[in-house]
Amino acid sequence: KSLYHREPQDNQVLRSIVGFLLLLSWYWGANTFKNIVHFVSACTLGRWWFGNNGEQQYLLGTSTKRAFTTNFGTISFGSLVEALVKAARSSAERESRSNILACVAACLLRILEKMIGYMNDWAFIYSALTGQSYIEASRSFIELFKKRGWTMIINDTLIGHALGMINLMVGLTSAVNGGVLVYIFTRNSIEGDAITTITIAAVLGFLIGFLFSSITTTILSSCVRTVFVCFALNPAALGATHPEHLQRLTKAWSKFYPTEFTASGYVDQLPNYNTVENI
Image (cartoon, rainbow, N blue to C red; front, side):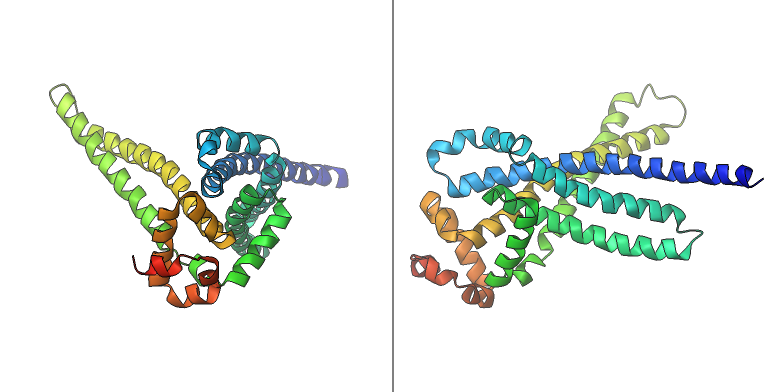
């Protein structure tokens, strides 16, 4: 009798383990692909920032090669850490309806997931620019931004909100275009409920437009964050490669964040700051 009751329990444990491993493999693969794109974007912009004009034509190819060779271990490890938390959170959420401890664990894991995901985005940028390992890049990033006084600027979420609005507008525009096109080309041949057909076309148009816009804005978000890190590492390097862009960035930062700009110490690193200030 005890063996009869034990066997279903063992099967349940086995199913839970297999389910967790399947979730882990899914999240690990998805995060790795996402972080490779993020790493390539950061590496490409970093080479544009620090490199000379003769290297510009090889930016994307060299960055992609680094992502799949020398830095693939860093990307995989960081993605695995995030995937473990995601898989644990998903497993806890499945049990949260019948277990209060699982509900609490799911909430805590969701917070941890957000923190690790946010840290990974910046750590991979630092790794792309310096070639450091995942742990070293995470530590160096935190120390660098504490030292330079960028904490308040990083917390500014205006870029994320702006890109989110762009995704929404592109999705809505695609939905309207899809619905109108279906109506124009099939208004004489649609049988039955025409509103349903147009609605389906509009929904599909919204999803497709939102998806493609999200891919583009994700790359833009990676580039914006990379500019933050590059400026924190060595703003004068941009003056040697693209001085006109350095002037515009410095002027904008000193205008909107004068206190942080003065406290950061970059004024001493930029010999042409007085000229920039008068532009």
